[in-house]
Image (cartoon, rainbow, N blue to C red; front, side, top):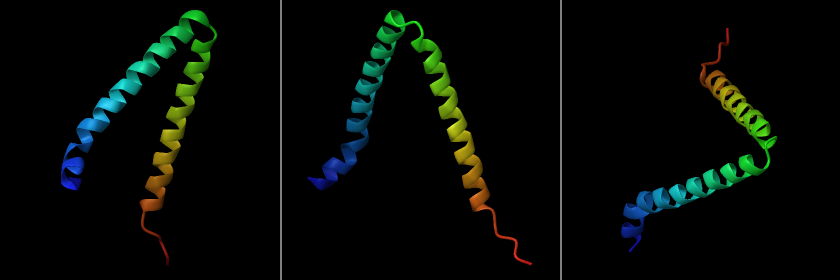
Length: 70
């Protein structure tokens, strides 16, 4: 039974994540249609997430560099 669950977990997660993505997309469309200023806030939020990912990648890269002890 455990082997069956581990083998089919990607299929289950893909279905769940697809449903969540469709729901969030529909909610975002409704919000933008009824609240026009939210579109500007969404752009700022996406920009903030992109900056977060970039800074995280830079910091992780710096942490992976070997230490230079002389």
